[in-house]
Structure formats: structure tokens, C-alpha cells
Length: 100
Image (cartoon, rainbow, N blue to C red; front, side, top):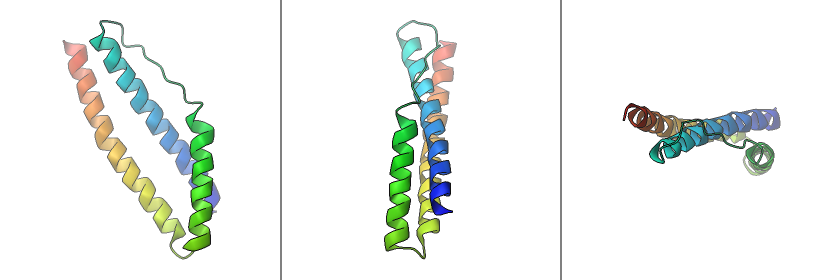
């Protein structure tokens, strides 16, 4: 159960990182006078984040089995909160760049 949850949450984190990278790329395109049609490669994050998540889940399950699930969820929520505010800042910068 813990490993499946860890892999699922790592896929969500991969999608969050992808969205932030595309937004950041669009900001860079606008600053250089190009159309905001940036893309990003999701491939490197897909196997890497899942392997790290499975390894982290194994370490948590091995050393702290009682709190492993709560620590995993807490770390995910902490990262998601950080990503959310960072993404809001990026979106605001993108909107400002689009207007000018």
C-alpha cells in the first residue's frame, strides 16, 4: 500500500514539476520576444521520481514503520504547498509578461 501510494504521489509531483517548467519556459520565451509556446520533457522525471519514491518508501517502512505513511503524506503536502505558492508566483509573472 505504501509503495503504491508513494509511486502515485511521485507521478503527481512529476506533473507539478512539468507544469512549473512549462510556465517558466513561457516566461523566458516572452522575455526573449518569442511566442509563449514552450514545452518541457516529462521523461526524465517519470522514472527517476518513482524510483526515488519507492526507495524512500522502503526506507521509511524499514526504519519508521509506525509513522511511514504519515511522513510520506506530510512530505508530499509540504512539497505541494511549496509548489503551489511558487506556481502562483510564476503564473503572476507570466500574466505580467503577457500584458507587456
